Every structure is written in C-alpha cells, then in structure tokens.
Image 1 (tube, rainbow, N blue to C red):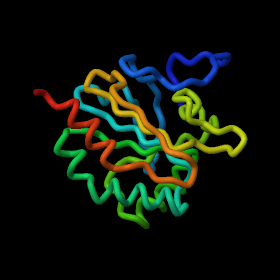
Image 2: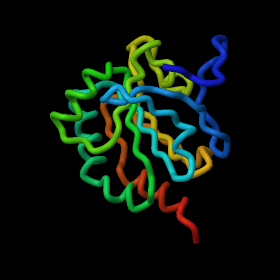
Image 3: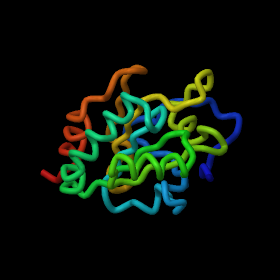
Image 4: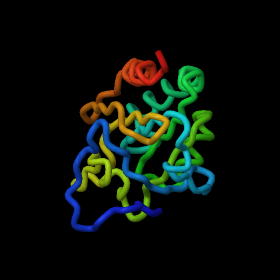
Length: 166
C-alpha cells in the first residue's frame, strides 16, 4: 500500500470540501492495485467502514450493493475501504455478493484512513466516513456517522445528483 504525498508527521484531519482528495493505492479483494488518481474521469465514492462481517457494516455494504445501479447510472465508482486483509475482504465479498471493490487498508495498518481523518488508533479501525469526489478528484461532499450507526444511503445519492450536469 502506498499513500502518495503523505508526510509522516502530518496530523490527520478530514480533507476539505473543494480540495483534491488525497491520492492512494490499495489492493482490492482480488489483490489487484487500485489507485485513486487512475479513476479520474468519473465520480468516485469512498466508503470507510470498521470491519468486514460485522453487523452494521454488513447492513451498510448490502444497502450499497442493492443500490449499485444508482451509482452506476451516475457513472460513479464505489470503493469500500477497511483495515481488513484482502483475504478477509475476498471472503466477505463472495459471501455477500458484492459487485464493487473492497480495498484493504491493512498494512501499514489504516494509513489511508489516517490520511482521510477517519482512523481510530485506540480501536485500530476506520470509523464510518464517506467521501464523494467529482470526475477531477475534488472532494465535493463528506459525511459520517457514529460507531454503531449506519449512514443514510440518500446522502450518497443526493451528493451524486449534485455532481450531475444541470
């Protein structure tokens, strides 16, 4: 895993709306590298979540899968990021039938989540943070929810509809 342009001493904070999203490269559940900057040309939705196979996370990921057509109709790439290993994520994707990439922020542990200001070092996990990027990689919307509470699916759909040309 590589976080591009990150300095070790940098304090974690949420990226600002209107600024370029921090670039990174992580492997998906199949071990294939996914670099954020390579996805420019269409919107990207980054969904950080604590752990595969946990109750609230599974509910959220299943809701995203059930509404994948809405993301596809907006030409958006959906990426779900957790600190799980690619092996865990592959088993999770196969068990639940997910049709989007699950990215392993496994090692260095949670480094991309740190870069996005959503890593909880005391618990060793990503918190629930979502980031909607436009086709140029600029952060256009971000939202989160507390531990144990799912994010509202309509927040994603509303953010994507605001990206659509008038």
